[in-house]
Image (cartoon, rainbow, N blue to C red):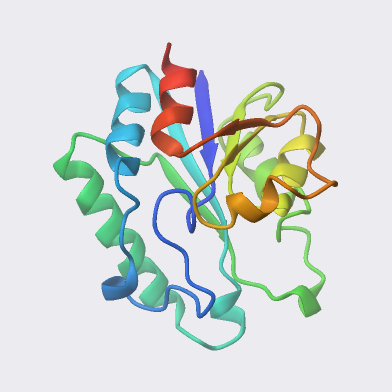
Length: 177
């Protein structure tokens, strides 16, 4: 099975330091939805792994998060794309869970649910924690320069094996060829 793991905020949609707290605030980055459709057409299953501490902080409820994901899925369907599963961590740093990136729990759960070895699987994010979680499970870390990516690319802790792309469309084109 061909699999790609994506972070959500800053990769698929515009990010906000105040969190994406409603479907109205969710706005796709230009080209990102078509990029997911391109991955689907190339035979990839696309899975989202996203830290969503706004739930744990009480900034929005889980049903609001589901409504945001529903908007994303409907927008994807309009361009012929789909996300096969969405995994999210609702916890804050203070919860010390195993699923919050940079810890690899969420990615390990993806591996278990899809009965997949994540060695070499593209894992695309915009933050250092996305890349660190990818490395922890043997996935191929890929950084996009959207969202927090422009800041992350200069971080000396960025894994040396990280591939860097301007955006999800460029990363998807690389993966799909």
